[in-house]
Image 1 (cartoon, rainbow, N blue to C red):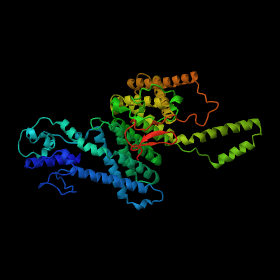
Image 2: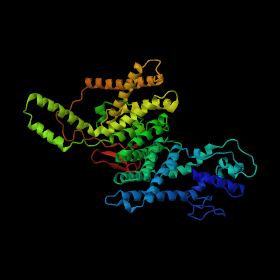
Image 3: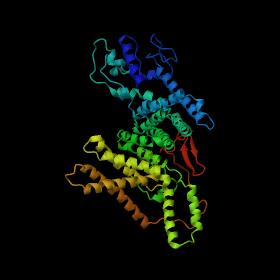
Image 4: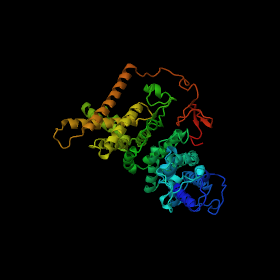
Length: 523
């Protein structure tokens, strides 16, 4: 956007001084056909020089930077490489490249919003009618370049600007495949190396900003698939930070709430994260005719819901058991023939301690769930329009719908925990509101109470219907099964991007015989 703004100012300056103006298509030309007194030499950025091919050279510099960042992260993520082999300034430059490429290049390109970041004004000059296509957006020239009074247009033509910028969007979107591999290498680097907190927050904020992509088919027909690829890679990077640095989990969880207000709300862009299910999950969970399935039969949830589920699941740790507990278990087995009352009392304490040890690996998950649900309902309960309460309530309903949809899938066990904490807090708020007098100053807002009643009723009705279904059709394991009984009978395209069989390079898994696009898995 900065480049385009400077370019428009320079172009308007050239027009005022009688120089030639060029279009964005000429600016992105691979072969420059114009050479004049204002042209810069090949390979030079030349400040604000305006010449054909300058944009293409900038794109080549960007691609070279991305390749360098990929090589650097790959080397640093390799085992046995000393962290001091690369200077901190170089790591910071790679982090800033990731941030700028997501926020200033990929998001505007996929959302078709690059022209919205350029300050518009009335034009300072009006080109001849037959040369309109040869000028670089004279409707949006900078007001600083106006020196002589000329006829002005009352409104800028943003449609022409958006159409011309497609010449810039295409080359930028062609770097998404390489950028996905960079994010994967950065994920490995973050897991294996200690990073500065400032750089961690920069990477995490850039990764979370990818969830705000509202893909536009006006740019390309496959923008939804490209956006999904970027979001999945960015989410994996954010989850890796969430797992590697427990001290930052509360801060990252708080950052999710401002992000929720920026998410796309259109029905087409609301649920874009493909629900991955193992072989046989559909039969086990009895999911049929899902409202979140598209024409290809794939089922989707919100990316913010998937990020929340994966972040909580990554907090699971191995239950801790000290050597004293193991010794006590051995003594308990040896003294089982003692007196009945003492033995029963000892067994009760032992079972209590054993249960605490078994669930100790979920303490971090419970802490994140507790923080998220408390802050979510706190924002929904604010009186009036304060704090975006009216905006968070529909977000809560969409979140509950996604959690109820995946709660029986073994791939997302954290959905049950989030629903449990939500139900607990919703029930507590409703009971507290019922015990308050009407004249109480702490009385809750009626709109929030209606929202809480609706949300709690939706959760309880879904749980009750699931219990009824399990009673009517019990799941039974077969008495015997052959080794190849549950092997897939045919090879199916199960790529997470949701696209069908394309005329491109694809990979086949030898175990499950599922096919994946090479570009989606970074090959």
